[in-house]
Image 1 (spheres, helix red, strand yellow):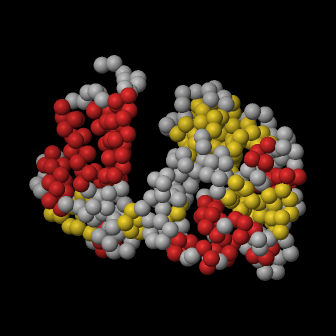
Image 2: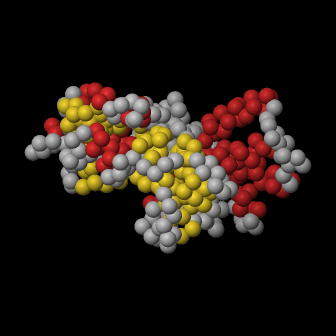
Image 3: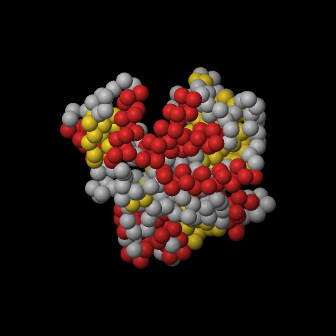
Amino acid sequence: MSKIEKLTAEQEKDLQVFYSEMLDYGRSIKPIDHEKAENIITSFYKRMGHEKPQFMYFSSPKAIIEYKKKCGDNSGVANYSPGQQWIYWKAFYTFAEKIGVKYSEEDSKLLAEWMTESKELHWWFPYEKYVLVSERPIRLTVNEAGLLHNEKHKAIEYSDGWGFYYLNGVCVPEELVVTDSEDLSLDFFTNEKNADVKAEFVRKFGVERMLDFGKKVDSYENYDNEEHPYWHESRYELWDMKVLFEGLDYQPYVKMQNQTTEIWHVEAVSPACRTLKDAIKERFGGKDMKILNIA
Amino acid sequence: MNKNEVILHGECMVFASKLPSNLKKMKKKPFIIVAPSETTGNHHVVDVVDGVDFYENESGTLFMESSVDTTIRCVMAERHDAITIPAGTYEFGSQIEYDPFTARLQKVRD
């Protein structure tokens, strides 16, 4: 069998359709059909010489973990299949088969069963005589880039209320999602430790509005573009944001733009940094380094 | 890449280095996480193609020796574009930020 080096135009088109179909299954919040779920899991049990197990349904994977704990099983997220959330590898091998890669009859049949498993199930935890099955989430929302995102609610939420808040793929505290931009407090920014969460705060709060509270100390415009082209591209600036901290005379922050997403980051440097040059050197661990490339 | 030059991939720094002694060679994997992301899982990774070897020192600092070009990228490309790292010997680090509450410098976390 020769290696497939290139897809035909038709296969390329099929791939797009197949990819989109697989994404829909991966993100599906359609309630699980218990009869179909039990049939597919039972077929796996029978393959291994076991009888049909008993099925117990739970509102979320979290509810299963809690039930396991109550039963004295503290293994947490172990011995499980996340069903639809692992459809990616089944999609990979299934598409390869669609375009002509040959598997043994047995492997092909088994792959088809696993594909059905991903289409019909969310998380499930098998035991010898019973299976703990989680229902699907009741909400799963993404942004245009396909990243988990919701500006009002949890981006992924189950019927028991368990879930996570996400903005542009970043898991963030509830407060950042449910608080209107005009009501957000800068205390959130100063207390947050995570750079991506802080960047999402800046995106929601508005970088100009935030820096209105401060005073510009230094800017990329004061440095030679040829010597520091990436300082210019990232539009590095140094701002005194002492207003955020009671009792401080000076608290510098570096403002810079992510070259890929164009979102703004505003990150603190020590009060020893009086110029942008000092600040960038400090961020590089005290080394004077020239940026060769940035993303 | 010259000494005193750096590639920035988000908070991750890549700079030319020599391999210090007492390094432990890392097991071959398709890619190595050079800066983990705790909130997105969108780690910064380097592709370990043939000709690329990774080493780790006792404090967990990563070094790479490569006879071919390789790539630093994110698991999901949306947050940072991929950058080619030319063949050479490199050390990986993280940019530093200041915590005004504790008055301490610390690695940037994302």
